Amino acid sequence: MPRHTISYESYASPEELTTEDRGLLQAAKAVLPNSYSPYSKFKVAAAARLEDGTIVTGWNIENAAYPMCICAEPVTLAAAASQRPGMAVVAMAITVKSANQVLDQPASPCGSCRQQLTEHESRFGKKMKLILQGEEGPVFIFGSAGDILPFGFSAKQL
Ligand code: THU
Image (cartoon, rainbow, N blue to C red; front, side, top):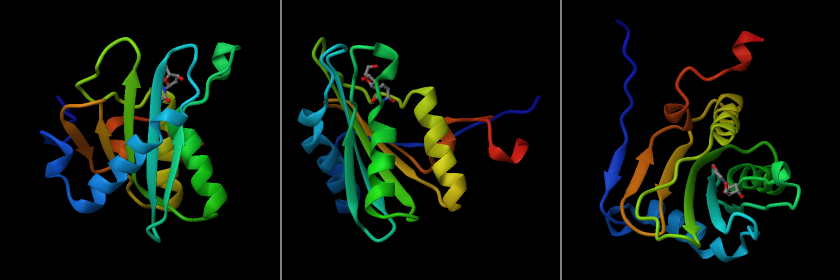
C-alpha cells in the first residue's frame, strides 16, 4: 500500500531554536495581546518572515457573526502582501493562548489556513517553514506548510 510520512522537528523549548527562528516566535508572542477574540477567548498570533528579512505580524479577528471570524494566518499573509507586494513568506511562527487552559502543546493551523498557506507556497514556488508553539512547552518545526496538508487541493487540477 502507498504510504505518506512527514518529518518534523520537535524542540523542548524556544531556547533550542536558531536565533532567527526564536526571534520570529518571539515576534508572534509579542503581538498575542492584539488578538480580538472576545467570543472564543482563544488568542492566535503569527509572525511571518519575508524573503528580504522583513517580519510582519497578525492575529485572529473575530466577529459577532461567528463565521466571519478571520484566523491569524490569513491576516498575516494579507499584511505581508500589503507591506511587500509580490514577496514570498518563507517562514511563519504561530502561537496561541487560551483563556480556559494553559496550552502546553502547539495548536495546529486549521484546514482553511493550511489551504491558504499552501497556495502561498505554490504561488511563489517557495517552501514556508512553520514554527508552532502553545503558550508553553515544545516547539514543532515543519519544513513546509504543504507537509501538514497531504493530498491538498491545488490549482494544478483546475
Ligand atoms: N484560529 C486561528 O486564528 N487560526 C487557526 O488556524 C485556528 C483557529 C482562531 C479562529 C478563532 O478566532 C479562534 O482561533 C478559535 O477558533
